[in-house]
Image (cartoon, rainbow, N blue to C red; front, side, top):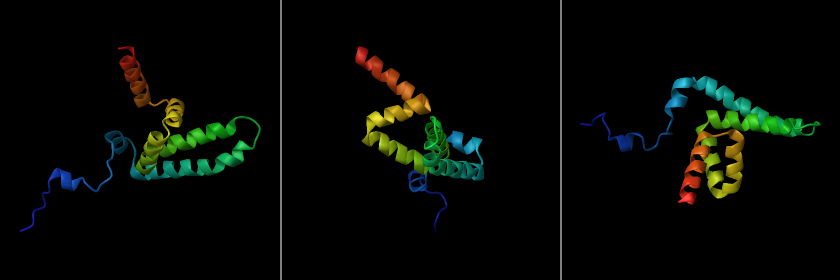
Length: 114
């Protein structure tokens, strides 16, 4: 007789981990719409970039922030890119003002001072 209860490892093995903050704060349809708004802003970045002024940089930053906040796929790609090119990842963290980057920087400074 098959049981409905599977070990936790098998149950969560092939699912995408969803953070509690993402699950509680945003409806899935809202996350979907915000992600695609980020994609549209990313597509619009080159067109805004040719205009005088720094507008393209701000549109790019808004697009990346929306995509990273609302998509697990984008987060995985971001982490992969940061591991491959750590210096560029540092600048991205600095631009996005990520709390995890501040903690990591403080930890590295404390370890370096010892």
